[in-house]
Amino acid sequence: MYTQALDLPPSPEDKSVVRLAHTAPDQADLQAAFDRRIDADGRIEPQDWMPEAYRKTLVRQISQHAHSEIVGMLPEGNWISRAPSLKRKTILIAKVQDEAGHGLYLYSAAETLGTSRDEMLAALHSGKAKYSSIFNYPTLNWADVGVIGWLVDGAAIMNQIPLCRCSYGPYARAMVRVCKEESFHQRQGYEALLSMMKGTAEQHALVQDAVNRWWWKCLAMFGPPDDQSPNSAQGMRWGIKRISNDELRQKFVDATVPQAELLGVTLPDPDLKWNESRQHYDYGAIDWDEFWATVNGNGPCNKERLATRVKAWNDGQWLRDAALAHARKESQRTRQEAA
Ligand SMILES: [Fe+2]
Ligand SMILES: [Fe+2]
Image 1 (tube, rainbow, N blue to C red):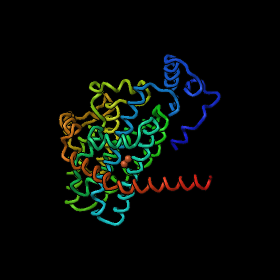
Image 2: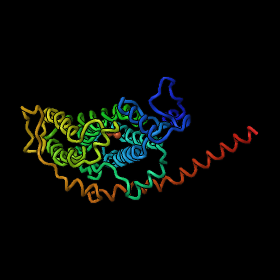
Image 3: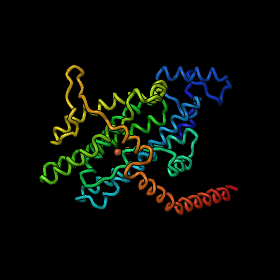
Image 4: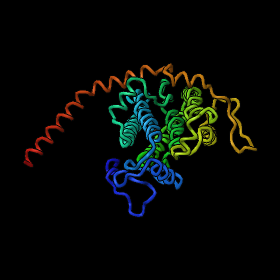
């Protein structure tokens, strides 16, 4: 779908973006046309001129997002063989497979910006590229799988819905489908927890323990507070980011508290309470030192996650070689037949 977009001719009535193939205007004209498009809340497509900093920001953000999707398969993938029933196993397989698909859409979207998938994966495997630090924590019991669906995918949806309106067309379009699938992920997690909460006292305790371990990490998923997030303003100006970290975090807290009440679990924050004047829930302080330690490679599973990805890449080398050799033979045959 993305490569097709590369071949789309500009619509005749569209004068807001200058295309390099047709004209050779100077840098200022190109920048002005780009700014007009952004101000009009229009989309930037791969064939359009864009400032280098915009391109680099998008490559970093989209590839980081793609890496998060495929590394995110690992904590739950661990539970596929240990799911408590056939029904739960099929749901979990479908979810983990969806995350692989999300990675593929996003690598494809990033490739439209001129960076190859090999380059992006090399950056992941060398530890240079980041992925969401939430996946550097272990899944200790089955309730963790439910809590990841409910809270981690729930936080991801909150983050990703505004990205459906991102100014970069391929990223925005990829996010529409991703968000639909994330919604299934969130519901399956919540439904699995509801089942456990109808069960024994031991099952209740497992759910509560998992909520206690994941809650604060999910709040940190929205990124540093707005006053410590220097790149946010530029992301907003470019129409890449639509809602600030703190606003998204607040929306997540407000949406999740009633769900926790319905489920019958306590969110582990003594400062969590409704603020009548703000019409929002107040919540306690997030441990940013722990967040940064994990981002910087010192979380409980950073090394294990990366080693698993590198091994998967190395183990798949024979398949990539075989696919390329097959493609070469095919094109040779086609050329010979045409001659
Ligand atoms: Fe996903
Ligand atoms: Fe998901």
